Image 1 (cartoon, rainbow, N blue to C red):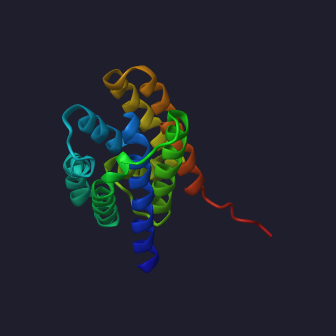
Image 2: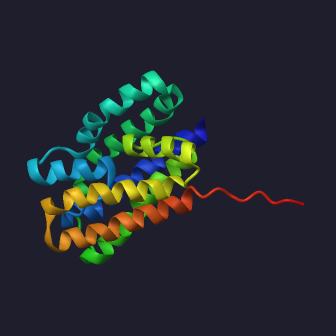
Image 3: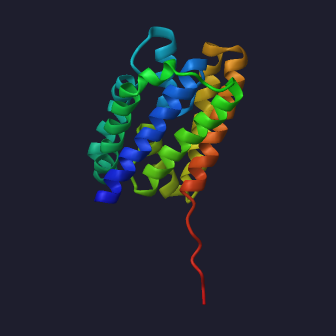
Length: 192
């Protein structure tokens, strides 16, 4: 239980630092519910963490009725990561590296946070939850599923941010997906 709690806190801080310190200043997107929430932030000025919670409600209602373990395992991750994303929002005003490095490092930090949490069977939101459902059914790595879903969301959000931000957002999504896949790889069982 302590390891899971520490994973949620550490993972949430990684996610919040990546989003606020590196993605938001350049209006970069991630995929999933974070990407959708960032679009709401860029267009309407909404708080990213609070938007994540509000947009997650339908999937969590579904999980309550059909997958209670997923509900209980991921609710803490959703609330913690949303809290830290809004709490660490002042990081947006710090000096950032150039846009390419921000996209790459931001994606690495977000992917690390998500990966740490997924290894302890918790998640940050409904897209991770959906990816976990699909991974259990298909036996495809959850990080790869997240990469596919994130890419689809990025395509829809791309016209909203346009220009070079869209291209660098692709770098972010790829970095998140690869890093998450690395953290969620299953260790092969050795046969003796």
